[in-house]
Image (cartoon, each protein chain N blue to C red):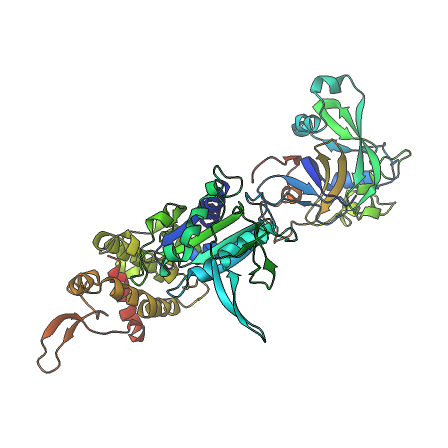
Length: 387
Length: 186
């Protein structure tokens, strides 16, 4: 996908400029998918769009495109980690673990993900020339505590071949004859580092951050400025490509056409309208990602199946996200769902809750599973919501 | 010869059924010899001379240009390919009839390399058509950046799974021919 390819180019460009990358945005905007695609690119660099290579021994398919040059040296070791509330400096930089023998129990240093990457590239027997660390959900852990003094080495200036390389400050290690004690590594190897050891250049980080999650902490500013930020926004064109819609031909819904909108055009317009309302009322970082609707498939010949799938996506994914975003703002949600202004005729999925004993309506939404309603009501309700 | 090579240009030409007949049939037929070559139409001459690194002026002062091209699929085997001028601003690849004396049919374009073949006694274009691949026949010559040449051919329809960016995409087109520049971004 072209847009995805452009984002990968942006990441590679940042790495080429000695900068790590932070992908941020609402859920379902393709952050993890992008990382997965990047993972593929690092393992198998994509073909270039120009240049021709000839294999003179291959009569059947002698020509091919050369692979694209990556800005980081190859081969690349890829490490994936996810930050969480229990993730610590000991996991990421260095920790001490007990080693028991028959005679004693000692604390031995173990390299975390970041230090292990540095030791990998300092190992003369290593097969790798660079290491890429993917950090998912970087704002779910306490990043400042996790990186500790190694936050300095996110900055390429302070690494080997940088403008002011600094020795890594691992005071918890014992040094004898100019070398540290043995440090255990994740693969079972052991390594020592010399006094004055500088952090290798070719360690690159790409991290993701959910901009909506209230359970996550805001990212530390000292950490944030050491990353190039790439915003992942909801992108309707991803859906139009997936659903083979010509965006120029999507109509503006009005009195004459709203009852004839196809399920895909309805879903496209629905997400657009919801996101405009969310961006206006709550902020663009709370918009709904296009991935929430990406599972609607064009292969279904029966249009009613697509309407039912849309209703199911609404019940199970979209409405819970709306409830979360509009928590404490019931009137705005009522207005967003046009409960006070339903279609002039026919039943409508969203209603106010009624007190059964008195018939009085409360200003709160009646619980509803749209996917369990009649197909005509599903169509009418979603089509009406696009306006 | 296991190393892959960087290609600068690929010259190619679509072989028409009539040409296929002319280069496959007995060289002497009733009513005259007829064409025993593969024609390069006027529209391709400038690009062809560019491919051969020759100016129009230089070509006019020469009888012909001969390149030595290896066979793709069997690169230890090679043969000459002679480009000559022709009346009407056209060019030709000479002596390609495989039955003529002193034939210079390039080994990449022989049945040994899988090139289509009509019987020696094929009598006319219609008979030759039986042996002409459905979907077309094209010959091509690839030139490396250090001016080494490699010849091959494609036959039939373009494979359905071939992407538009594939460097062989054009080599399955139904156009007359042309020169593919490896620098062109697809």
